[in-house]
Image 1: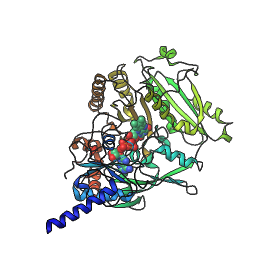
Image 2: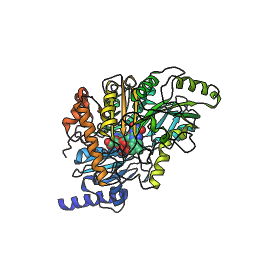
Image 3: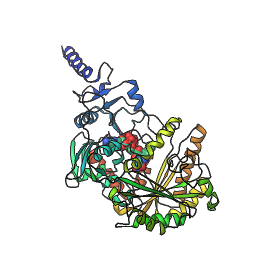
Image 4: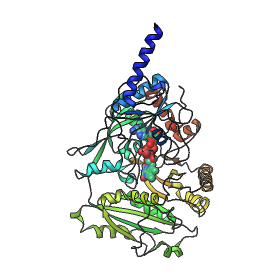
Length: 520
Ligand code: FAD
């Protein structure tokens, strides 16, 4: 009799799942899920897509993939994970390098594909509040769509990443930085409010005023405390156009002196974007983000080779001034006044002028170019570091002019930011000093040998920083032991740990970060 009742119940549960996921075999751990607005699938192509990321350095292996239709779907899944002993990873757009958004092989878990629009119900589209200048967006929304929705009202977010095909939840779980961060702070400094499904499966609204511990935990929290389903992002009136200028340096000290001067400027003179990069040679794979040096520019980089410093390295400072069409008149004088104060190589000024949206979406063009040559979907052993200002000259000597040699295999970005624009209550860690640099080695490995070589170079760079006590912090960090994570967080570790115990005590979330061991 008992067996018969059990059989009826099980048949009922399976029927419910057939309704929600179609005719697929669903792992028993997921049988307790009820009706979903979206879809749960074990389809091979979905599993395969959720098993890799942009880094292509390793593979995950989820039991199933959820295409959520609502926050409730996610809350239901996370609750089931707590009860059924499986892990859950939100996948933004899969643009991590080291499997941070994957389910580690050997761990039972489900990937939530935050960006997908499959299933019965789609997550909500962006809603702009013109009067209060903010936009409410789904956590899996791509920044390019946030931009487009905001521009319909003549508004735009203030702080960006260089590339817009990243998800809101993914960048807010790290920081989200670009050349605007020196003034506006990272993207996590430009959020008013979040809806978060905590690691316990509770759907909570949080902000500085309400549930503030969760709010600050999640911002820069590497997905450890909750899944962002809605973010309220601050907007400003969108500029129409951008004047974009690049100038070159052979002297690193002058280059960084000028960058630091530019990020200290306030008032009308202040620029809108300050970045920079190291130029090693002119090959496509090293300079795919530099389409700017086009044949229409009068100066070719190769013609400046005589100016290369003793280390054989050139540095490019990149800056912009945004403008509204009716303010165009004074623009030339304002830029002239700024350039006069800088010590770049004379005659190395490259200027272009373009619509604001084209500037923000510039890396996508480079992506299309690489894709067309089969150079996008290759392994990416990237390394991103925050280096304190006081040690950047040592870093240049030891790394750019030392370890790198002439084999870098990708762009190297370098630009400074002001720490006071980073809210210390958020989870992300930065160096101690008031000014620190992002140094990003964005490399592509075209074969096994190159991958080995670049991985080794990364290890040597990290070892150099360690030995020289540079106190650099990894951005988009990757470690494999908890001791390394404790060292990374330093003074913030105790808080990070207690937040984990408060919001995700069973450690079901974002196991791909390898911070906490998941025990079913
Ligand atoms: P994923 O890689 O899918 O996820 C990242 C982490 O966040 C994972 O742990 C995941 O579980 C978690 N997560 C994802 N969604 C959510 C959510 N809704 N709630 C909670 N946790 C979530 N970064 C910059 O700051 N500036 C740049 O200019 C920049 N440029 C880039 C250019 C390229 C070409 C690439 C590939 C990456 C770039 N990045 C940049 C890095 C990017 O910010 C990270 O990859 C980040 O993880 C966002 O990617 P994603 O949205 O695909 O998130």
